[in-house]
Image 1 (cartoon, helix red, strand yellow):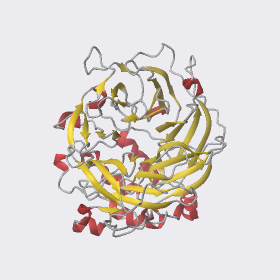
Image 2: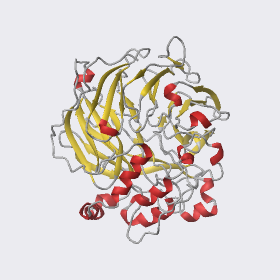
Image 3: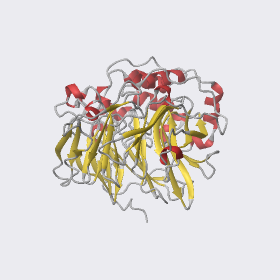
Image 4: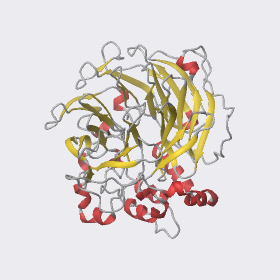
Length: 515
């Protein structure tokens, strides 16, 4: 890693192009503690915002249910729900499916929040404790070339892959590169590792090791989230505290170098990049939820002393902690997909023909996410950790004129939607894997199995009048957390979940591809 040129860390030009809401409730701590702080502040959110959200017909409108064909094992409750009765009786241990069939699974030690895939291989993300407790340390590589016999083919051991990859483990499919950043306290960073997965995806080769070793040079950059630019030349990373954001030049993956390192003054989460590289879309890990668009042309063109310039900021009140925002084009018109990871915000689509004033086109929520079901979801998820029936990462089947959207919807599993008409999405398939009750001890790398105190904060997020006292016992395992971005591959869908590990699914009943 080549160091950045020696000059003061820049801050972003924060002159707003549009009015911004009050951000007095920004996070004060990192990692799960930061999530807890946001969740706790929700309890005292202004009643006006909550009232407007409850009254908004678009907020309460769910996407139509999928029509499940032969070979399905449908949900027994609301759309997206794992009812408490199923959790108690053991029914959730059989899972639920609709127009998606399981082809292959490699559970291993589970997965640390976010994994990646390329070709016939999956890469399971890590959490920090597994560097000490896992039998196979580092990012586990799963070869699924023979779906009947998936196997652990390699473990990637380097400072970045051992130190907890969190949400930074990302593949650039065009260049066949896998990158990860070690996660520090909320802002993190310090090490980045870049692997060649194109040559042999089952045995990735570390490109930026020092003198042939697995050691990689440290650098000053954040490491909570990351994303590749579409051209594969830049790997963007973000952190929570101070709105840390950095751009690493990956033109030569053997020698990455920091070309931008700054602070936005926000609480940054996921980051994505426009097709031409001139815009970055930064999600907000705060209240209110939202997305800020920046002009990143200085970085894209590698100008000296680059700056990010704020274009617009869009916020909303019916969700908490925006996970990421993804630009795409439909029928020649530019759009942005934004997804919240808490507060049952779901996903939403904006028209960004004028990116100074993004215009909401449609929200996507499951029935269980509707405001009138807050008591139901609170009871279902009270013992299952901080993340409930919430969206996390979604993937379009293609960036231009997409036909489908697949999402890891945490305790609601994998959900797939027909979005050929953006204003009238409909669900076409889902797969919620079997709950791994009693398996906690073998899942050293599962973030869900590891979190010892998350159940309490789930109760705070699902706050409502007359709610019972918070649950403070051990987090249960009656529903998995599916948080990784799925990958479309013909009639197959590559996914991974915290407790179930690497999964390969196949669409059935002609649910997809869409004609």
